[in-house]
Length: 266
Image (cartoon, rainbow, N blue to C red; front, side, top):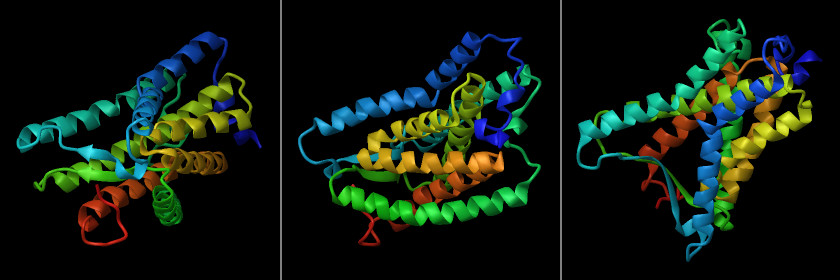
């Protein structure tokens, strides 16, 4: 099946750009985005495991206030962070345009909205339920920090910002870690298995700040997402699934923290 090498991987005119340029371009995109996040998460993890006390007694906060006590300045910082985090996706779109392609080559478009939404909702339902159970177990065994999905002030823009943050995460991660990375690795001659491993380990690496549980859980999720991408040839359903998972985590935590006994809080 041709999609095993990654959808669209064999359509790149290698005569126009050398393998070195394609390799360097890929490394630069990762260095500006999730590759750098992986290194940052590793440093954070080393700091956590060398700190006195267990991992579950420490907290990893995902959406925190950028200007406590100054809501309008805080909102400006939140929107700035969301917008700038998507710049690498724009860079990927630019590189695809250079090939005579677009993000449609990765299946990130509006040509199949209902199948993308339906598939994404099913993925989110399956992964969300198992993910919560895995996180609670990993934390209980001391392999994970206490994850605090949001710590924003109780202001009018809190929930819109959490939803925008979830959308930013979904687009950035699935376009780059699945669609773009698999395409480029296929063009560089990587085997399907090696490319799957690279994508999945990268996804796990930038969640390492949460602990071993965060790394392992997201690595497994990465394997599933790569398999689904190769099956469907679209990142659209993965973006939907990731978005719904993050909305559930961010908004759900905001609504339930301190009100249910099974949800750990910092």
